[in-house]
Image 1: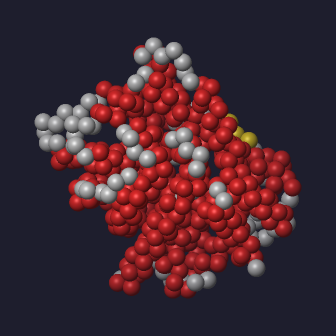
Image 2 (image 1 turned 90 degrees about the horizontal axis):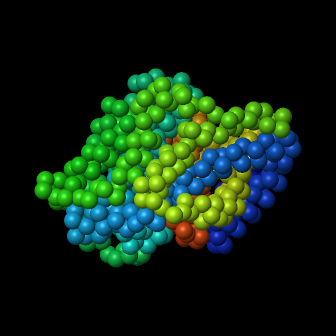
Image 3 (image 1 turned 60 degrees about the vertical axis):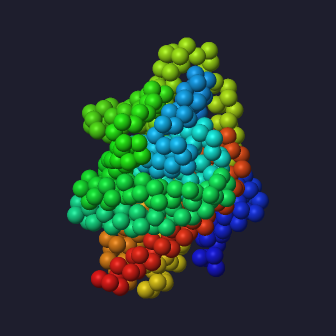
Length: 483
C-alpha cells in the first residue's frame, strides 16, 4: 500500500493531465499530495517549509519566463523576429530542414550555455515565427532537450548532481558521461522517427529524413567525443560543430546567411556563457538571497537573481529597445502572462516538494519509489532510466533528479552486483529524458509560446519519452549481458 500511495501523486498528474488538463491535474494533485504529506506524519512546519521552497523555486523559473518574454516582445516589436524567420531562407529551400537545424542546434546550444529551461523559452518562439505549429515547436524542442539536458549547463547535472554528492572520481565521471552520451545519442536516433511522425501529423510529411539524420550526426559524433574529453562543454561545442558542418553541407562555402537579426541572441549567448568561462565573474555574481530553516522546518532555499538568465535577457532587451527606439517595453503583456503561469506552475512545484520532504518520520514518497524499483532484481537495469525520468518529472530538473535518486541508484547497483557507473549513466539518461514531459518545462515553454493547452504537449511527448527510457534501459541491459 505504501508503494501505491507514494506513486499516487504521479499517477494523478499523468492521468488527469491527459484526460482533463494540466491545470486540473496540478490542483487535484496538490490537494491529494497535501493529504498524503500529513498521512506520512510530517509536521505542519514542514508543510509550510515545503511551500516556501516551492514558492522560491517557482520564482526562479518565472524569472526565466519573464526574461524570455521581455526580450522576445521587444524584438518582435522591432521587426527582428520576422527578419530571423527569413534569415535562413538562402541556406536551404526546405522549411523542414531549417526547422530541424534550429530545433537541434539552438536547443543544444542554449541548454549547454544556460540550462534552467532557457531553450524552451527561446527556440519554440523562433520556430513559430517561421510558420510552424506552436504545439509541434514546443514538443519537439523538449524532446530534443531530453538528450542535451544530460550535461545541462556546463555539466551541472553530472558534476553537481552526481559527482559532488556521491564523491565520484574524475575517472568515474568521465566514464559515466561518455556512456550516457553514447546511449543518449542512440536513443535519440530512434526518437527522431517519433518526431518525424509527429511532424507529419501536425505539419507535413517529412521529405528529407536522410538529410535530417545526417544533420543530427553532425551533432552526435562530436557530442560523444567531447563527452569523453570535456563533458562540461560537450553540448555547446557539439552544437557549434554541427552549425559549421551544416552550413557547409547545405549551402557550401559560398552560402550567405543574414546574421544581423540574430545579433541580440548572439550577445545573449555570450552573456550567459561568460560567467561560466571567467571564474572571477562567476564568484562576483554568485551571491544568493538565502532563506534558511523556513518556518523552523530545517528546509532551505534561495533566489539567485544574478545567476539567473533573467539579467542577460533584460540587458539585451533594453539594448535592442534603445537601439531600435522602441516605444514600449511591453511590461504589461509580459506581467499578465506571468501571473497565468504562476497559477499553474506553483502547485506543480509544490507537489514535488511535498513528495521529497515527506520523509520526516519515515522514508519519503520518493524514497519509496526508489525502493520499489530496486526490488526488481536483474530487471532493474531495464527500468533504471525510469527512476531518472520520474525524478525529472516531479522535480523539474535533471540535476535534482540526480541528487534525489543518484544515491538510490548507486545502492541498488551495489546490492544487485551491477556496474555502478553504468547504472548512474542510465539515471543520467533518464533524468535528461524526463525534461520532455516535466510539467515545469511544459508550462513554462508553452506559456512563452502563448499556448494554454499544456495537455496536448504532454500527450504528444509522453509515449516518445517512455519509449526513450525503455530503449536506454534495454541498451544498458545489453551492455551488461555483453560484458
